[in-house]
Amino acid sequence: MKFNRRRFLQAFGAGAAVAATPTILRANTTGPHRVVVLGGGFAGATVAKYLRMWGGDNIAVTLVDPKASHTSCVLSNLVLNGRMRLRELKLTYDSLSSFYGVNVIRDRAVGIVDNGQGGKDGWRVELKNGADLYCDRLVVATGIGFKKPAGDFNFNDTPHAWIAGRQTTRLANKVQALNKGDTFVMTIPKSPYRCPPGPYERACLVADILKRKGGGTVTVLDANDRIQAEAPTFTRAFDELYNGIVDYRTDVSVESVDSAAGVVVTKSASGSFEEISGDVVNIIPQQRALGFVRASGLTEGEDWAAIDPLSYESTVAGFEGVHIIGDSQGSGQPKSAHMASSQAKICADAIIRMLAGVDVSYHPDRGSERWMNITTNSACYSPITYDEASWLTANFVYEAPDMEGEEVGKMALKHIGEADHWSKDNYEEMFAWASNLFTDSFH
Image 1: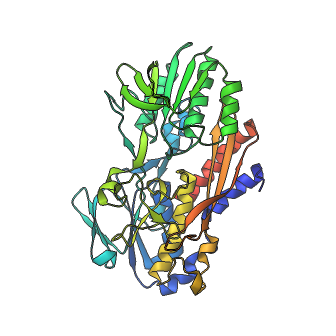
Image 2: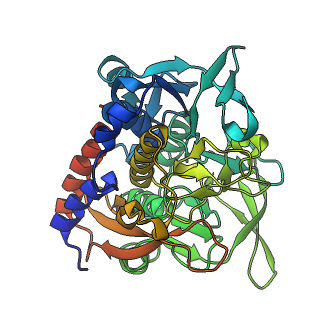
Image 3: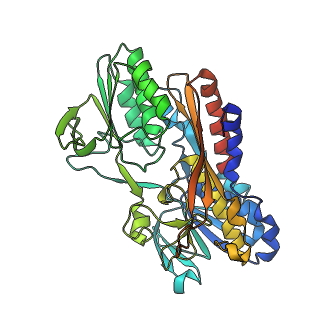
């Protein structure tokens, strides 16, 4: 399938990911049933909204997040060059609460307890303030955590800015203070990490800033063996547009960081070590599910939580009724806001069906064909210069288990498309795409 800009913009609708909304099941969903959602980012906000929109009054939804609003990582790299202000990326829960009837609690979950055998009698969520929430189904959408690099590392001196907020402001202040001839050093973690094209677009934007100031160096230390998204676009940008400014290196791992000195000790694929210093150092650490998710047992000692992509229910024994969506799950799909929204709708659809007594698991011998309609989409724009951008979209389709004994299928990449070149038209359309995404999740 060939993608052009029109198809790309239409692809946003693919995020719905289900053949039909399950509102026809409302009559069979006798309740009220209780669903608790942990995390108010794109995944959590979307699933809360669609559970109420599709499930009606038979499903009571409580959203728990420690913050009063969510600051979008989408477009946050534009804070570095001053094209966006952080407050413009603030998304509140007002509409979820007032229009959709979601009960929003500002707190943090510290534990989940099975009320019965295998979650059959629901779950109890322990909150930091000492209160407990009880629910029939639990959705975990708590985002990413970081693996702190070795050495004298300090998040304030070498901000990652990979969760939008104060970190973004710190890095923006450092970047805007760069002068002609200065060096910006950034690291890219081993995949998977949040927003595959994000580090490369950041390198481009900082290179653009230095280019406008008369020159400098952007040293990109990539732990991967190649560019992870939009490779033709970013390769062309590094080699042509920012030739002599971007120094892109692959297979470089971070051994230690001295934040105060602005020094990174790296190890190459050949085993050699090197000390690299910069006027500004941006360490994007290795990522994994948040500590709360790992401590609960949902990852079984791994970095990410295993799920069934038909429902996003945990595949770990004893966690029936617990669903994981967004960046914490490890289904192999990209970790992005658009993908989180897409997964949330599949999850909401599945929860409503399950509460109505419908089996959503893979049973081709029973004639169940819902699984044939499960698709997800990840789409994004990447700013390349001060006023030009490219775009990327990827579609995933559910594939049934192909090995005897397997119970869970997978989401397989079926189509991918990207812009032929960065342009000013793409840059303008980027804001319309982001506005649609923000509205779909939070309004």
